[in-house]
Image 1: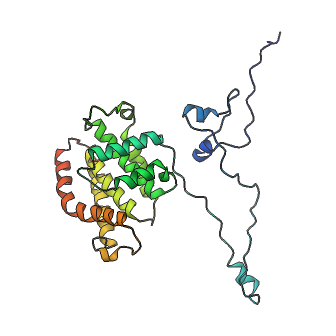
Image 2 (image 1 turned 60 degrees about the vertical axis):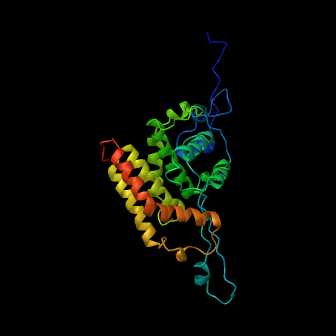
Image 3 (image 1 turned 90 degrees about the vertical axis):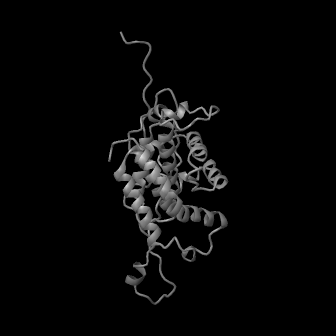
Length: 275
């Protein structure tokens, strides 16, 4: 005899949600909830904000030049290129956790390595600008990696700071993500990329990864020298007062005073790993 209670059928998935699509994983709809199984497991909003691509061969439009007497071959060569989708950051950790890491940076790292302007950085983080700016995202991941390993080593002594939730987040998650994003940055070079190499060198020392420290510190010095950043006359004319001061701190301070602190960090690092 058939049971009177039948299990609810799973809904047929016609389009993966944004979270599953970004990670190229199967989107399984829950039979009783609006969120899919993956979004439910990872506590992510199950959204469908992206515009689905049309099936079949895409028709490329040809934009002709202003001169009507040009040949068909010349006008076709000036066809418009396909618009690339804007870069969006992978979902590594909640924004609340990132805000906590950044605040702790200014509490336990900034006194030795003052590489950011606090009000402007906190404002950009609170607005979530790192989710659409790849270079800025890399510097945030470097901050999280450095602060996470400092938390692990007991550097947070403020009794008013509750870091219990952050202690469960492995620094390797942020460290690896920053490494991967730096490797795929290509020719994109700006103050965030250079500063990320400096932060990653400090984090590598703290983790005992001496080879990584030499790699990132070498990249930092190479980029500073390649773009002549030690000479303010080579800086862009239109930069504001905040970026100018951050460049001074990053280049002048780290090239001079930072060497002493990096040497102290290296001598005090107890990690035997050379990674």
